[in-house]
Image (cartoon, rainbow, N blue to C red; front, side):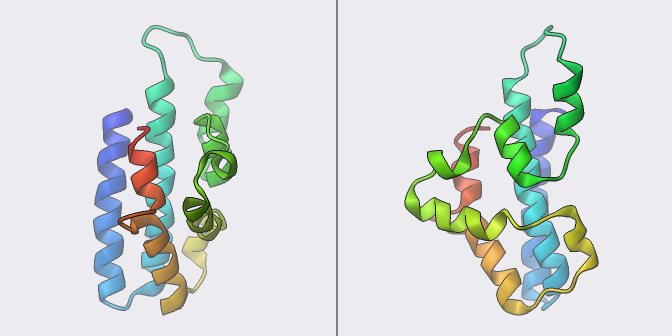
Length: 133
């Protein structure tokens, strides 16, 4: 996978999440919404990779995570310090997502909240990440 793959996958999963949300499949929509941010953060990390540099093994192992807070740190973003206040509120909704979300049930409000935190046209976290990927 490369940076462009992660960018495309983020946008594809965003479309998938919208279809699920529109069809009242809230648990799936919630899970895929978080996965959008995971892919976007991995695209940001990939952007930092220098061609021909041999990566540090410890760093490489760390990027194979689903933890959004850890991925944000690896991308070089202290999200809560860098984001404007309005983005911070959105990040607080998103950061509780984990890959374990796929095993849980989520209701309409939870699914709408995470999807909106990602897609808000003025302060969606995906919009902010796209400026850096």
